[in-house]
View 1 (cartoon, helix red, strand yellow):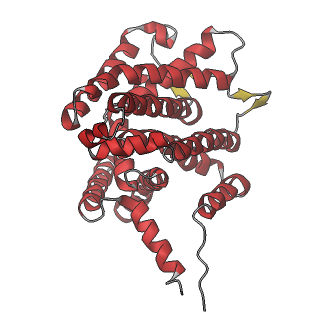
View 2 (cartoon, rainbow, N blue to C red; view 1 turned 60 degrees about the horizontal axis):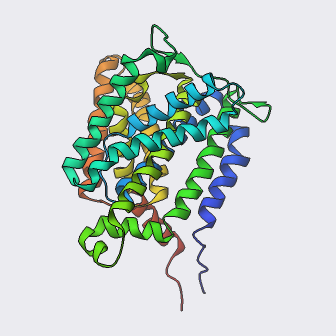
View 3 (tube, rainbow, N blue to C red; view 1 turned 90 degrees about the horizontal axis):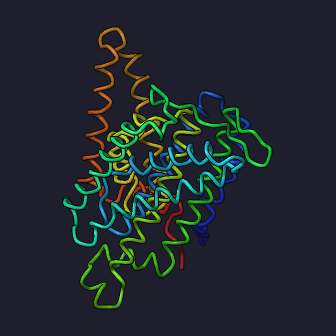
Amino acid sequence: MRNVSVPLWTWPLAALVFAFGIVPFVASGYVFDALLIPFLALSLAAVGLNLLTGYAGQLSLGTAAFMAVGAFAAYNFNLRIEGLPLLASIGLAGLAATVVGLVFGLPSLRLRGFYLAVSTLAAQFFVQWALTKFGWFSNDNPSGVIDAPVLEVAGIVFDTPVRRYIFSLGVVTVLTLLAWRLVRTQTGHHFIAVRDNELAARVIGVPVLRTKLLAFAVSSFIVGVAGVLWGFVYLRTVEPAGFNLDRSFQILFIVIIGGLATIRGAFLGAALIVVFPLLLSRAGSLLFGGWFDSGVLDMSQRIVLGALIIFFLVVEPQGLAALWDRTRRRLAGPSAA
């Protein structure tokens, strides 16, 4: 009997049908706010970082800084340009993050590896300092915490958990499809060539410097839009504390666990990072709630998550995406000639 293999594109299509057609009718408000919306925002940020680190090989530790630039830029565009549509504010915010990303991506023309990571780490501290130091960014709010504007597109207000989820899902779907298309073009091949061997890429005619800057630009744009989703849709406030260094490492861990140089790995890693701590918290509260306080449980989550990251680095460097591929092939079974 001959086994018929399922085309790869059917899995993303099935996921989209499920996400758009079923989830909005069966999930609760808690699931939208606590799981699905942060999952989508972090997944999009991981897609952006994966283009830069996984495909182009440029290590960055300043992802949260570019998210913050996007969130604060969208807030100020919306505040200071009367009548500007929300989607236009988000697009301009992505461009603002692109400009900042290019500035801090310039050291990549000379630096590599650990040294480049340190230079992008400077972006994290500089952006947080600037947003805290200059009150103009937060409209001179004394607390520095500002409420996100109303989410309204074409007269539709996204003011409920399910509507905010649909809004986030639409933005993430569009940008993910564009990223997926990009990595299959000549530009994506240039990213991989620069990652694998810069000298060989230069010899075969790849414009290495332009490719690096383009990787920073595209990555920063996507990450900036993810920052808008994180602030406007999930937190519903915009503040520097929401984009701290821990957020940068969280997104880096998502990319490592999900798998470098794979778009679906960003979603698999984000799902684990978002769901796993909640499951550990519930299990810890049920089993050890009377013995340990919340601080000990939180530290236990960090320890387990750290051990999980080490496991993937040692045992499965290609992450959850590789495990997914192997599982799918086993379920399909050996194909007959």
